[in-house]
Structure formats: C-alpha cells, structure tokens
Length: 475
Ligand code: UTP
Image 1 (cartoon, rainbow, N blue to C red):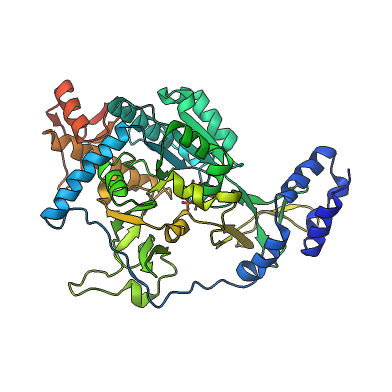
Image 2: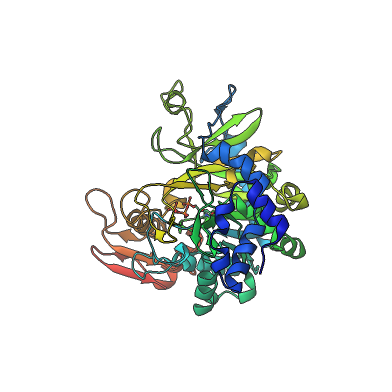
C-alpha cells in the first residue's frame, strides 16, 4: 500500500522522512501499524516542540512573586479550625456514603527504576503474603464498599504498553472480589521518542519508539475513554486520584474529601512535610494567586534552603501526588477534546534502530521523552485546597528495588502502619531497641480500612500481643 500523500507531505515538511525508511520492506500489517502511529502525530506541533524541548534545554522560569503555598495543617491550629475539621470529616463521610466519590489509579508508567518485568501494579509488595499492589487497592475498595454501602467504581489508567497484561491480570485474579463492572480500564496516549538530533526514533521497522505521554495524559484520556460520561451517569463527581506504586494510600480520607468539598475546590492535593530541602518531591508554591508545583530539580537552591523565623523550611510542602479532582473541572479543561498542559523533558536511554536497521540498546541517554504532568492542572483550577498528612500513614512509594522509596522501605512502612493500628486498638506489639517492629505483620485491606476496623478485628480475633519474631497475617 502507499502512504497517504497528505501524511507523507507533513512528515517531509517536518524533516522526519527517516520514519519511512523501511516502508517498502513492510508487509501490509506492518505498514498499517506504522501509518496508524504516524497519523496520531501532530507534525506541525512536533516541529515546534523539538527546538524548544529537544535540541535545546527548556528553562523553567521561576516567577518573581513565587511564595510557599498555604495549606491546612495536619492538626487543627485552633478551635475554629478544629470545628471545621470535624465538620469536614462528617461531610467527607456523607459524600462517601452518597456514592459521589470514585477512585482513579494511574498505572500507565513504565516503572523503569523498579526493573520489574510486568505492570507495576502486579508487583508482589505484601511484606508476608506477597499481595500485589493492585490487590491492596482492590481490597481497600472492597472494604470501603461494605463500610459505606456503595458499589464504588475504580478507574485504572494503563498505557498501550501494559494494557493487555494489566487487564489479563485482573481477569486471572477474578477482579480480587470486586464486580467486573466496578473496574473501568482506560488507556492513555503515547508520545514518540526523539533522538538528540531532533529525529523521531524507530523502535522497529514497522514502529516508532513510543512511550506513555505522562500522568498529565490522564485528564484527556478520561474524556476520550468515556470515563467522564460514566461518572456523570453514576453521579460521581469527586475523583480520588493516586499512583499505582503506593499501597499505603488512604483513598477514602473523609477529612480530605470533606475539606475539598467545603472549600469548593476544583482540585485538591495532599502535602507532606519534606524530610530536607532536596527531597525528591514537587514543591507546593503560589504565584499570581494560583497554586502550582515546582519540581525539586527546578527549585533554586536559595529557595529550597530558605527558612522561616523558626528555622523551618519555607518550602516545606512536598507533593506525594495524591489528589481529589472534580469531574466538572476535568470536563471544562478537556472541552473540545483537547488539553494543552506543558511538556516536561526526560533524558532516557531509548532503544532504536540504527543505520543498518539493527536494534541498539544504548548505554547512555540518547534522546528525549516528552511527558505532561497531572500537577500542571493545579494552576488551571479556580479553587484549590492543600491538606497536610502524616507521611507514615499515607505514603510508601515503590520506585526502586532497594534504598530510598523502595520495595524494602515500602514493606517496612506497611508493617509499621499495621502495627500502629493494632497498638492503637490496645495490642502489645514487640519492638526492637530502635523502636522498629520486631515481627512481620500483614493485615488484609479487605478487613481493615481504618482504626475503627482495626479495633473490630482485635476484638473479634481476641488479639492481645504480637510476640518477638512472630509472622502474623490477618486475612
Ligand atoms: P513515575 O514518575 O514514578 O514513573 O510515575 P514510572 O513510569 O512509574 O517509573 P519510572 O520513572 O520509569 O521508574 C508515577 C505514577 O504515574 C503513573 C505511573 O504508573 C505511576 O503510578 N504514570 C506515569 C502513568 O500512568 N503514565 C505515565 O505516562 C507516567
């Protein structure tokens, strides 16, 4: 078959004819695949992006009026705020019970740092049972569905690269006890990888090198997939958004949900107090009255290290990427089936076909992937809300196999969280001299969502003590 002439013209006009180098060698299926990929590319936009992001390095301008963002503290500051928090908790609980909340997991990433063969959500993170990340969330939702008497819908964003493996995993595991129709998979868009010379890379003779377009792709993908329509039909208008690598997520946090609603926020965010000026979390800032996040790598040293009169970091508020997003806000942003969020450049080692048509896996970065980020929607919101949360209770990201933000640290945090829940319910848990738990504990999220559930479990199972070196699973 011949390539569409219009398409060919725009490829040539953009100086990207190398993508057609093997066209005549391809069978019809290969030609169809490649043509399909090329049709999805806006070549004139690409010609604008390449000089801006690839052949030169984009500079993040730090606005002159940048200031640390205000936030609601973890503990209410005074009695008036305590009253507001109590009201918000009640409101959040009511919203959960009324079925206005749904859940959204972004699981389209490639998880390169973890180096795990398969979708990240299928990683066996459970410290004792090897329960997978997806199972943690699913069982959490199961418990929430019972507690709030609502059949919650769970939206899961995959990418073209892992959609098949993800959906098969759910089918093989019987949706972890959820009804099949409670889970809505949708696939995000892709972006072609670009070599440092500004040329699109081929991953095979019949394929560009494509990668997911970043978690910012979620918003448009929600519209294009029909997810927004389903939310409207089901009457859900608050989306609890979280990442696939954090099994500690408190996706049904009544205080967070209630404050989001009482503050009339279009998009809200959880903030954690950073462990130091250079912790790898985005920084909550304000400029021109709008909330925004400046990446850790972009915050100038003098701002990162700036302290207030008490010696506390001025830019203390870090983002663990947990949000509440209103459905109408997404509807507004994506009206006309378009959304222009800024692009971010990531330098990567991208396998590519060389001059001789051989696949090369480079040892050093050889090109750029462009991604958009969900947090770039924050400044587009008319109203926002930020709530401080306790890191130990909500955030254990699994980015690396070992070290910081790793499988190891995540498992330890899961054990500590479950131990604290038992302790608050009156159980004596064996601890080491350094204070860490001296036992392996895993409580099924299908049993315990919060302290109230933990107290009920302790009572029902008559648990009084976890002895040193014990391995205990509550399933
Ligand atoms: P990360 O930034 O940690 O990227 O994604 P990653 O792809 O999972 O891991 P690395 O950087 O390759 O090691 C944060 C969250 O955003 C999702 C990921 O699945 C994860 O839940 N994500 C990221 C997407 O859904 N799509 C994307 O294009 C990128």
